[in-house]
Length: 187
Image 1 (spheres, rainbow, N blue to C red):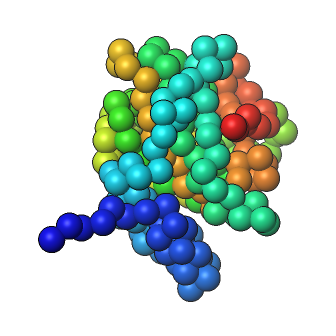
Image 2 (image 1 turned 90 degrees about the vertical axis):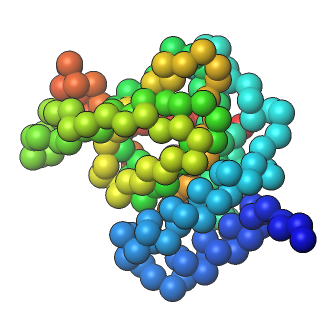
């Protein structure tokens, strides 16, 4: 007996059902994590183009899906060896699953009260290596950074409650203690 892989179409239908049934972001994350893992491990959506990363930026985000109102955005990220992201939040719930290779995530906590525009103090609170099938999730204000410390390009699947460019998310510089808008370029 052959078992069919979990498909992107099935995942999107399940995602729509979950977000229609509850507005609790914690419940959404609990329900989406295993489904996103299933989709990531199936790799039915993964094409050759998803294994290329822009040398100037160090990574490329490929948009797999976005609803017309910019909700339920699904991306594939390809990151070159040695390349990283600055600490950032997502401004929406987020589920990220390792597909190929391993990336080190550093988790941060904001320690100032957020009352000064453009200013932010962060403290590191942990690190975790995320490899194939590993899942991390974030509420809108969760902050992390990541780096590909391996030799191959890493691939990961990203699922967001809303397209990142419509959330007002931020990037942070812990040394300069700054917070600035963080907009992405996706293909």
